[in-house]
Every structure is written in structure tokens, then in C-alpha cells.
Image (cartoon, rainbow, N blue to C red):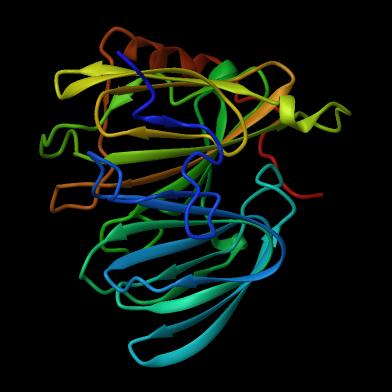
Length: 297
């Protein structure tokens, strides 16, 4: 079974001025999208699709989004951050029906999902983003829940980002969300966009930073990804168990998660691989990794 269909190296999805573009032109993909751009100078990129909602996420650098929402023109400045490993960033939610442009210098991601439902435009400040320290011990990770149902009124999108310190595991235990089981599991496509960097101030080649990511089959479908992941790589999870995402010793790992799906309720409900769910029971007896939370200094 080949992983080529669901795992894409940086640049292999380049299109229309974006370093990566995931949308429904990919076979078997329909509910989520992601655009990523690396801007080495001030460049304007179009946001001209009206049948999608979006969350603009600065990965590194600052950006200005000029937008038109329901006939009202406006401009939002996103202060951004130095890198994905320096804490949360402010983000902008653009509802369906809006158009606009992004201008700035750095690296930016735009999470998307097709919808005709309209929600209010919202600029979420970094200081207002819920920061969760999930897991414990070697399974400790930091989650920025800026686009989850409890934090943002969106139509379909569920978006968050995860920072896994060097040597730790996340997306663990492996889990799935590919069946509609009311109150227990929801059907959600998921995109993983990865970045990796040497921990702390290690003076080594940034391009060598890596982590590992796996996914495997469930009754909903066959899938297999076992990949070394570096900055800019993307994994698509239409179904199946996914995890772990492992940060190699010496290298921190980041991923942006974009989810949406078939179900009428916007909810992130998962089922663990029953062989490994027992691991959760060990966490109350372990401390959270003292390196967390990561934040700007």
C-alpha cells in the first residue's frame, strides 16, 4: 500500500503562488483545505473564493489582511510571531462570502472549508487563545485551540496547532474520527501541516530537523503513512487511525491541524485504538514536561 496519495513533501502541492495548496481538486478530498505561502518580500495573494470559510494563521512574520465581508470593506493587521515555536499568534476568521488579500513578509497558512453558512468575522488576539498542556511525561504537548468549537464560532472548520517538545510523542494514543457515533465519534477529514526546528538555540542546520508521523487503516478505509516529516510536509487523513507524531531527540515538532466533515454537528469526537488507550491512564501519575509552555521571550 503506497503512502504517496496521502503524504506530500514540501512544494509538491505548489500552485497559484502558494507553496502548498490542498483542496477538493485532490482525488478523494472534499471537506477541508489548506494554503501555505512563504513570502520573502511583501506580496499580495488573492482570497477570492466566496464559498468557503477561512482562518488565516501567521506561521512566522506579520501580515495585513484586506477584506470585504457582506459588502463592508476592512483591514486587519495580524501581529504574528517569530516562529511557530514561540507561542500563540493572533488569527483571523473570514466567513463564507468574504473576499480579500494578504500582504506581508514571512510564512502564512490559510485553513479552509467549503460552506454556505455565514458566521461573524473575528480577529482573535494571541492573548485570548486557549493554551492547553495535554498529556504528561513523554506524551506532553502544547495545544493552541484558536479554532475549536469552544473557542470560535465557525460553520464547519475545527483548527488547532500542536507543539511537541524534542523527544516527545503527540497524537497519541493513535485515534480515529471516521464514523458517525452520536456523542462518541464524529466524521472528520484532517490535514497535518508540519514544521520542525532544532530545540532551544542549537546551532545546527534547520533543514535537518525532523519528526515522524504514522497513520494506519481502520474499518472505514485503508491507509498507511510512515514518514519522516520536515518543515512544509503535509499528511492527509481521510479516515483511519493516526498517530503518533514523534519529535526526534534534539528537534521540536509543530503541526497545524485542519478538520471538517460530513456530520451536522461541529464536534471533535475521537475513538482511541483500543490496543493503546490504556496509556492515558498512566498520565495522572506523571508530571507535564517542565519545558512547557513554549512562549516568546
